[in-house]
Image 1 (cartoon, rainbow, N blue to C red):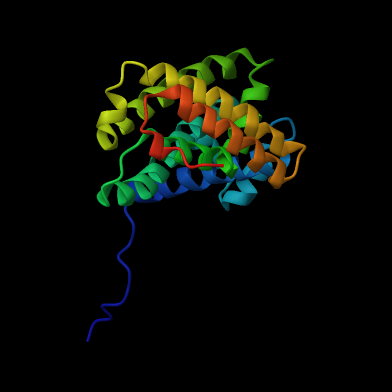
Image 2: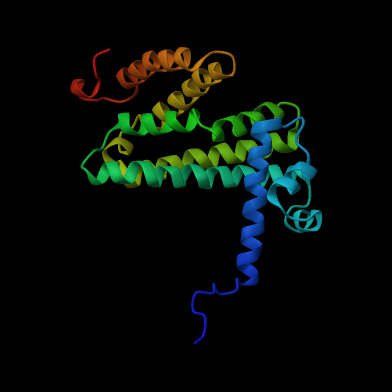
Length: 212
């Protein structure tokens, strides 16, 4: 009898996609551990478990790798949204509060740390800054589309775009406290900011703002 438990051989396209994903994951891990200034392609290749030739085949330079890592971060952000928001909405929930809480979870995770490294590096790297601007513009558009899909009432507000921009800028500031302060201090700061964002961001029912 043939051994039906054997996995089918991957296609060339699947192998390329797997190698690319491994390199991008390794890039994010290296950004978090070493920071942009100390990040090397040698470390990325080692973490990804691929050859330098494979890295050079997929990405022409360190800058190219960083730019594509930004897009990979976007995919991860939206994937997290699918996992987090969809189940809640299936239970009948829909609110600006839900969207804020999800965005804050992202800012408290490793993806924010990796993105912060690139934001800082972009100050003196014109090429990276240009692509980072594009990345942020596309991320904002994707967040709007996500809200329109899962939170249509929230997204329909004429103040939605400005409110999300304000919320994201505020979250960044609070999340950055985590680089010097302990988690309790950051959580306390967020509890205050969250309440104010809910009050000022969009018209919400008073019972959606829990007492503190």
